[in-house]
Image (tube, rainbow, N blue to C red):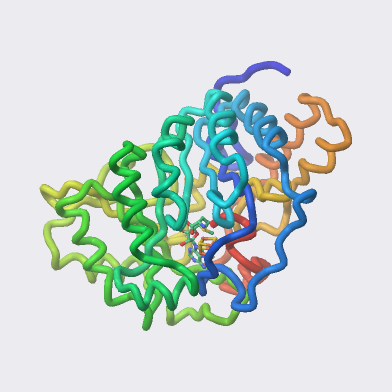
Length: 332
Ligand code: SAM
Ligand code: SF4
């Protein structure tokens, strides 16, 4: 296999250098916006990619200029041998290795994850109220999330990014409180528009808080400056004048960012999904288990890049996300 260091471009001239890897569909929480309320039938262990299979694929993609990998799930920290997996992924040469977690198990693992090669974390926290947190996550303990945030900062898994999904009638009254956290702390607060992805009837258009509304709500807190486009990705970033942290707004619905999307997704059961909302997937597990060579695996990676759609249609037709039974199956 020839080593190509430049990132490859898809059919719409977008540079593809970012892979989100879901390493498990299991989770220790059941967030209302992510999982069906009845829970989920998880993949059998034999259906989930092994550490070796994940690392092999990342190494092949890295040879094509993959720069960033985000480990996600389900809850990635419930996977056995997570430290070994992080270490092996970092050794492929990936420049930026991050992980998204609900923060239930991070506090006890943060130092070891850093040592294993993890660069930074995103921690999901939608509310500062313990009762609302329980209502959203069903089984979560908000104190553990704060402990994880503090520990992640202490061991330099930074900047700590906090993912917040505002939902009207549940936590939309807390948007300004979250934004104010950036005044004194070097947190990146990332507001993510609520997407139709849990198949449990919780999603409705009027429950989504648009990015325009988020910006309006926080504008009274100070002088908000738009930050120059740094790197690529879906987040539009802002900072209050003189503030320590950053506010990011991710608006898949009201202002989709497909024109500069740089990512692919790998599901826990070994399918490359070129777009969160695409129905087309490229199976890498079957060929890998049937003995495909690195050159053959490389062709599968290139095929996934080639079929990446120009854009998703979620903002015109929210039912376009209807085939997403649960975000936890894809990794968000
Ligand atoms: N379990 C980890 C966590 O919660 O951070 C990682 C997986 S979770 C699927 C990844 C991200 O997707 C989380 O930040 C979560 O808030 C977000 N997410 C899940 N369902 C969503 C939805 N319907 N709309 C917007 N974001 C969603
Ligand atoms: Fe689990 Fe994360 Fe989904 Fe919540 S958002 S149910 S923590 S995968």
